[in-house]
Image (cartoon, rainbow, N blue to C red; front, side, top):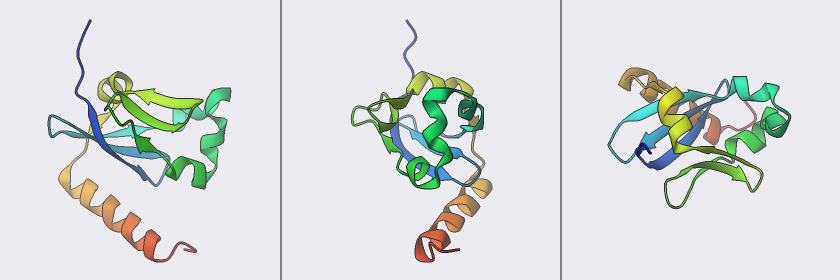
Length: 103
């Protein structure tokens, strides 16, 4: 069985993407749009639900609720390494949105 890095932080990004930080220091972007075709992930179409994502307390993935989660292996294997410039712009966009949520 392969051992994957644990998730330390997650942040919802525009375009149904997640910015996921792992315990090895690497940050990846994970695109959730393919999940929206699955019935179990339909609630993620709602912005408020999508943005409520949290890192699992033990690092085994990300969770939205008891019925929706993604394992660290999925995020690690199918995420793309986030470039620092793109990551900084995404965080700036989120900070602006948090200051003005009606925009």
